Amino acid sequence: MIISEARFAAAYYTQDGDARRFDDIGGMLSHHAEHQEDVARFWVHDYETEEWIPAGEAVYVSGNELHTPMGFGVVAFSNPQRAQDFAAGSSAMVMSFEALMDKYMLGESSHGHSDS
Image (cartoon, rainbow, N blue to C red; front, side):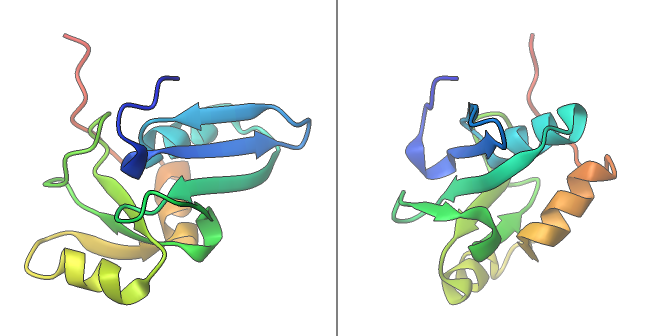
């Protein structure tokens, strides 16, 4: 997978050591929900600093108005207050990784990406 913008990047490593890289956090979660691989660790990029952070330590902002490479509308922050500030004044939701993962595992996510 080509990473088009680092601030949206995500990845995970399987227990077998295989790396899966994505240019959109929602793409990673959607792929995992579909394939159910045994994951050793999920990683995401901080939206502002573009640094890799463990996915479980990040706070997420999710909303249809957020424009991400694959249209899933999810960004990550290492600082919870920065996530709250980013979401303020919009209809976006601030979420934990666990809540976001549940949303994708239950098939409640949608995105605006189109192959046309």
